[in-house]
Length: 377
Image (cartoon, rainbow, N blue to C red; front, side, top):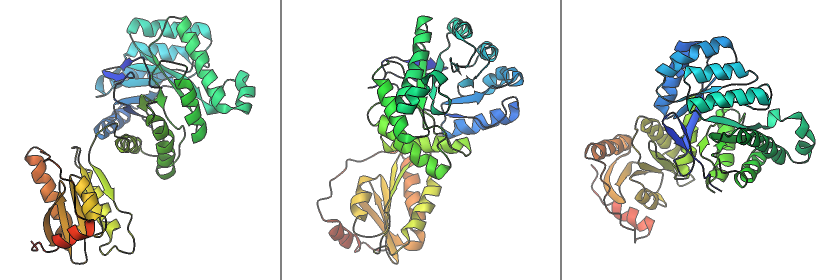
């Protein structure tokens, strides 16, 4: 079930119907302020809305006030094993702290951090990870790791609630996708708090993006999850890009263009893969949200392009540019992509007005045959 409670991390609302928030984590040594703030700037430009920084040492805590001041997005301090670093992060003015109550030094230390967060009006993130479950849950984990993750998280929830603290979000991450899905589903039935989704240690951009899309997509489509982090072994900007592609595919967020392209087959006369790759690369420079279809033949071209804002369908020597369900022009194949972007740019300059769509009553092949009679431009 969807979360009932809402927290605020800096100026970003999480939970209870707010848009799903995209976050990432810097790879830099946090005490290297120049490198860290540069990476935060790159993440913010890519659409990252919250950024987490690791604070394993005192020198990292020393850097936090300047990082917070220079960051264009809310900064979360990631703290493990050292309550004093969490206290210093709170004093530095971070937007939130991520702690594991089970390894921060015992209930007294947790209470100290919670009181400081309460005074600062600051939320926290708590939660369990399959790679670091408490030892007393080993038997449960042997039987069902998802159940162990949920119980570990609920122990932390009960501790914070006993301290009168309710401003937190929860994660129950696993690198095993089915375990992660089951754990979040179980947890969502037991708590009202916002949930932070992620497949931990997902892997390289190829496999990690697939695992993250499967794991988070299965939950998000059911309304479970309020903020996401795609954990890739890569430049964190790639995490943000992947997160938005997941959210765009589910219709949950709009950021930048969406491209659909046919998978190619023996009917392809134009090399649709090359066309699609070039169109995708040129679309990266557009912050506006619109849909572009790239098709390679007459079978699906008119229908698919008709559902997009713009589209191209290729042929041996000529191609067709579509706009809002209508054939716009027939052009030589060598200028097909340039003509597509000429029309996109003109549409954006004129205010991105979307005309009323007409359902295509004619079969796609017949429509393409008629389009072929259009004079070549």
